[in-house]
Amino acid sequence: MNKTVKVKYERPDTQRLKITEKGDLIDLCIDSFILVNGLPVYGNPEEHEVLPGGVITVSLGVAMEIPNGYRANVYPRSSLFSKLGLTLTNSVGIIDNSYKGNEDYWLAVLKNDSRKYITLKRHMRVLQFEIVPVLTKEFSFEEVTVLETKDRGGYGSTGLY
Image (cartoon, rainbow, N blue to C red):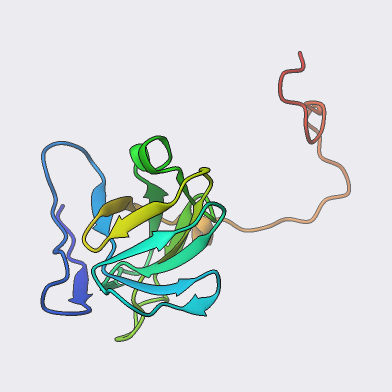
């Protein structure tokens, strides 16, 4: 079943979303530079340099009307860190279906975790997303005083047997 997602692009030359045969996720590109280290970005609108340890907020140039019962998960592209030294500061971005207004353009905050200056260019593919169902409303919560399953070792039990 094919569902429709309404997409509004921020400007006429914003990169259009494309579903390809190469993979299941859809690329997101830098459309504009908003903030660097919390301050407004001035200068060249086509590229911006991020110093080591610096943080930059970029617009991805899209606003979407995601259908009820779905959300978008936004991930870094696999080479974002290995090639550029950048990380998506919230690791995975979650865009729920209530963020769908006319001016609700998707943003991303990227951190330069490398030891070098990084030059970002407009239209660079930096992130990717998928639209997934949200099952939360199919559940209810029942308050109990005891959970009857065996403990697994608590928080931080990775690597323990």
